[in-house]
Length: 245
Image (cartoon, rainbow, N blue to C red):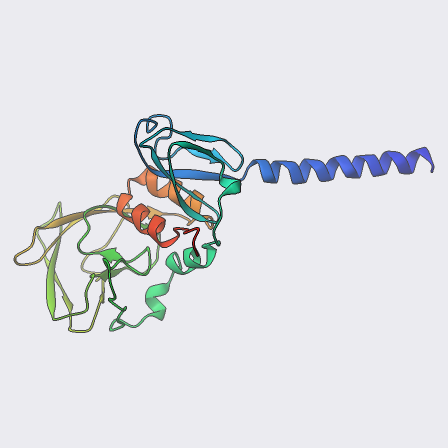
């Protein structure tokens, strides 16, 4: 074979290697919860490579989220993400993070309440029972969500730095209620007090995301960096992989 063709083939093979090898090497997960003796070694937010050895001691629990889902690793033992079994939860992630969901889901829609605590079916619904930072896609419609559909309920909402108060009503059978963007304009960093008679008031601070990552680990990093811990918990639970499945 002519020298020129051999050189070209070698160059193409080298180029293919440069494309394929980094893709595997860059596969990562992110720690979303940790406890035990090795917690300082695996803090929340730490990135872990697909083939990186995770060495845990007795009493350790490290929860890692990657593109396939969330896995809970318990010590003592040595693990790698690439060797963890269980089905991918990419479908659950896509449903949970679907934007513009408020436009497609009627206000009176009801989620089943069968066993265990009820969690919001969409990450971008604002949980009236949850305080703290709440991340939202910029320019998306805002919907308030309550963890029950039983009975009528009225919530009062006021800006932390203002006096005007707006009422939001959930009717019996409803878990969603619209946010009045005209009466309560939302900008990045704005805070509101949500209250209901007989319950402790909750202060919510909005963090607006210019874009939403399409990979679970990247979104987890965004939620961590903005302090949106309640949504991080929802994301972790919704994408949890059980090896028995």
